[in-house]
Image (cartoon, rainbow, N blue to C red; front, top):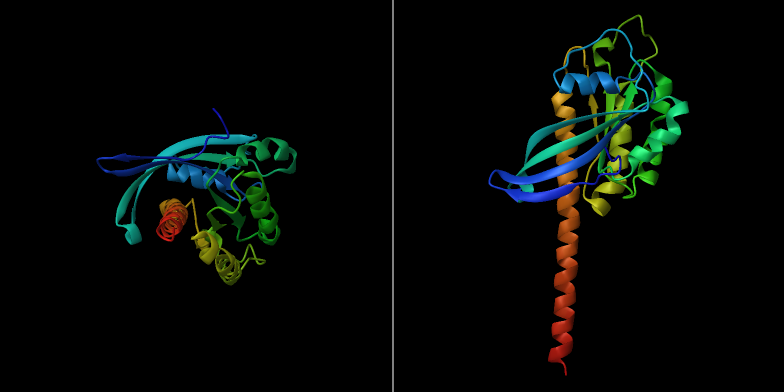
Length: 230
């Protein structure tokens, strides 16, 4: 399997088909694999099983993009990347060609939230595309307000960080960054996480397509004006 596979688009009778490589990133133990398993319907495991390097999964979601009135069938190629430092060299290879990322922190682990900035920057620096759509995921929300975990990350911080990133990216690149709290154990927002990311990937794609079309139209008009002035 090629870790650098890129997204592809083609038309079908049911709508536009897209194959999109995405990565799941964040510290070890934040719940990346648990969310992937829940999304695939594989159930929840109470014991922690460390991902060795990277795991792969594939599944299709359907998304209707209201601004363009287009239905998209998106086949996600999902690379679940180990978060432990010793896997960094392997992990960096799998960033390449990814058009989106679910960026995880554990709401009961403040350090995992503080490390988000480094995770996101590494992804953007190494994917070969630059700044592309991400969703910030606060995992294990079933433990919210559990007295056994007194030092939790407030939802306010996740939302605030997503809002600040959106201000920097929306006008320039056509997509927003959202914050979503999930629970793989209780299946809270599992499917929604992938659908929200799908929506922003489509928005980014549509924005770039419009920019290319506008540039082409502008160039044609300039050539036409030059010819007319002769």
